Length: 296
Image 1 (cartoon, helix red, strand yellow):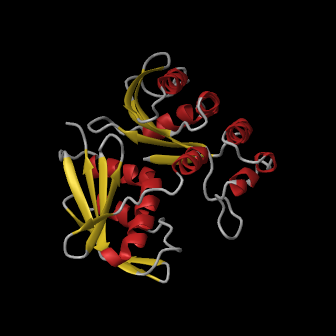
Image 2: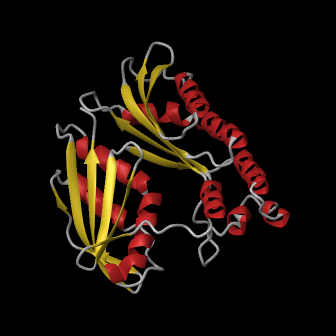
Image 3: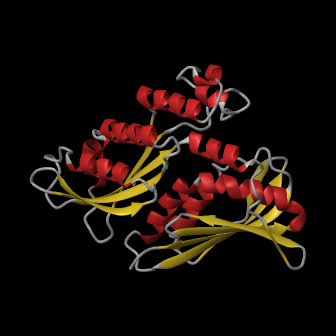
């Protein structure tokens, strides 16, 4: 598995500025510099001034189960298309300032270029996905053996989408549901349902549950990597990882994961937990259950 974060291009930053103006953000904020001022203008920086969220494209390349693993050979030709992929994203944001989501493609190299099939589309923008598909198909795969197959994931992040939702919705409705016995829970996952998660705890910890649910929802790309590891060369169609969480003074501790999957998936989830931002969450004891599935 190869995972890369593609730094947003200057064009994407210009599009973000236009989007902010369309959403009514002040001209002073919209003119913020492309090195992080726009993010600061819409409240997306950490306390130390570092940018925590940017519009951009995150790329992952993984092998196809049952096929020879030639991911490294596919890496350079796919990365060479990322400039065009970013342009597809920029054009999509001009059409709709809130465009974001995930798309996955299965590539199989031919004598010239590659045959590309769309396997996941969570962008709600057929023109964007078609543009990215065409760009990948035009890649130069001359150095890759014919018939090599790989899965390419493209994760499109756009902070303007979250900003508009907050502006339109006003005070957001809490995603936490109260249960019998003084308990509370919150659920989430991908649109396709290949990842689902549930956070549960005391009703007194509702605010912490809500905050953790939102952070997990923002970090689903990492769980998608864990899902691929869970089913690589495996025959299971579903699996679950459960872990007990302990939040103290903003630090997240956890028990060893309990899993129906093999070792690499729980280890991946354990590493992913360390990337969650719990610094502003109140103390609580919680349980997290993550379900993975794949099409047979």
